[in-house]
Amino acid sequence: MKVLMVAAEMVPYAKTGGLADVVGSLPLALKNDDMEIKCILPYYSMVEQSGVDVTAELIGIPVEMGNEKFTGNILRKKGADAVEVYFVQQHQFFAREGLYGTPAGDFPDNLKRFIFFSKVVLRFCELINFAPDIIHCHDWQAGLIPVYIKTLAKNKPVFRKTAIIFTIHNIAYQGLFDAAQFQLTDLPHSVFTVDGLEYWGNMNWLKAGINFSDYINTVSLKYSQEIQTPEFGYGMDGILRNRRHRLTGIINGVDYAVWNPETDKLIAANYSIQDLKGKKKCKADLLASFNLPKSAKDRPVLGIISRLAAQKGFDLLAEIIEHLMERNLIVVLLGTGEQIYHDLFQDIANRYPGKIGVKIAFDNQLAHKIEAGSDMFLMPSRYEPCGLNQIYSLKYGTIPIVHATGGLDDTVQAYDPNSGKGNGFKFYNYTAGAFLAAIDQALELYSRPDEWKKIILNGMQADFSWEKSALSYKALYELALGLATLK
Ligand code: ADP
Image 1 (cartoon, rainbow, N blue to C red):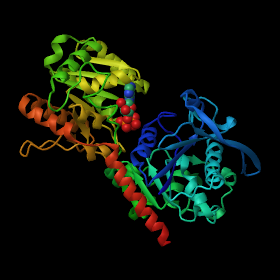
Image 2 (image 1 turned 180 degrees about the horizontal axis):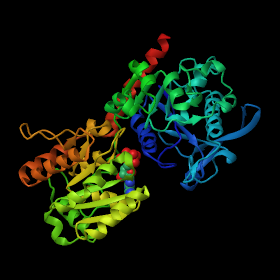
Image 3 (image 1 turned 90 degrees about the horizontal axis):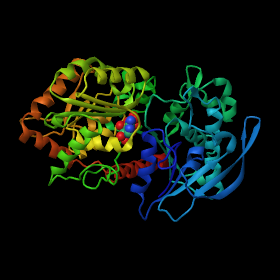
Image 4 (image 1 turned 135 degrees about the vertical axis):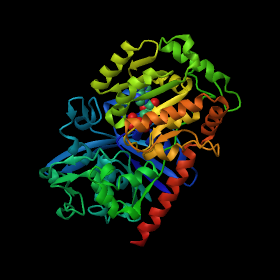
């Protein structure tokens, strides 16, 4: 099977979010002797800064966009890797800081940048005579590719048998553009309809991806159901309900080569299901990292690592934080994001010394230390397509307390004292009261060490490796191929 993976981000070359992790890991997990996989993304300044060694594959590819003409190059990562990685180089569009914009807002030419990218990707297949069975498109930036394949490129021999998968990583980002720019796509006007890519008079590239692909998936089963409702759909719910028979969810895997307490080099001591002793050392080390008193080691430590944004449930945390400070526990928080939360948590840290450690930063090593050294992990997200930190927490024997939404609901099973099954705690109504009640339930169980240990071990046994998710993607590719040949 030949697969072309098209995305705007990929670890370790360019990343702003979870999309990059998926595109970095999934191809490696999919790869076997029957699979030929190529990945392609733009050659941003960030890619150049990553130090990847590249060679020119195709030079001076002409691209027309409306009345304008551009040229671009295809670079290939050097070396005999299992998965081939290609980059679309075009100085005017991609040689700049930032992937989609600056803190002041989106780049004004994003439409042109990603039309150009899409067109070069299709030309690339023709020029190297690569006939993909599957083109796997990710998020709005790749949303026009399915439209081109189903219209202008329909009769190109390389795409005769191609089926298209479209993965939605976060429905809130849709790629909305002014209708006046539609002519730059060079697409027929017949696609600018309510069943096509038109959305309230504008172009919507996410909608394009949804409507023109053979199969659509999101990064958890629960999220694939939630986005069909007005509450979570960000305006796409009706469109997704229309296509619900072609919509599924596959949970992201995590990289256990990086996130594993048995081998993690960034934590104070390693530990495993068989021998948990190291976790105590990690807790002491974590407390020291936050200048918290040694005596705090007998109290439960609640960890948080997050973008500080309302999506992540910080509105609820803000409501309950004073109540938490009255309880016999310690909170450690690592994050960056919205200024109101920076101010709020700095203020709490000043008022409750010795009870809460706050670091406003992006700090990978500290993130590992928090996963290893905490007893519980808080993730009250309002919505969460997949979420990674709760999955890391399970592996590190740190009990997640989560809002039952999206990937959080799919990966965390509420502990049931009767059966002894479950690996965490959940709350179902998105309210401060429900969140606090779930924490109190966890605190109650923490005071019973034998039972607590059972929950820890249940969590550490869970397997969210990429190998497992890759099998689901492989099955999805086969399904889409079958459906594409039916047409
Ligand atoms: P999202 O992609 O929505 O931000 P995820 O839970 O899917 O949320 O992934 C977040 C990733 O970013 C995790 O790997 C987490 O450890 C990391 N992360 C988030 N904030 C920080 C931070 N301040 N310092 C270090 N790592 C962070």
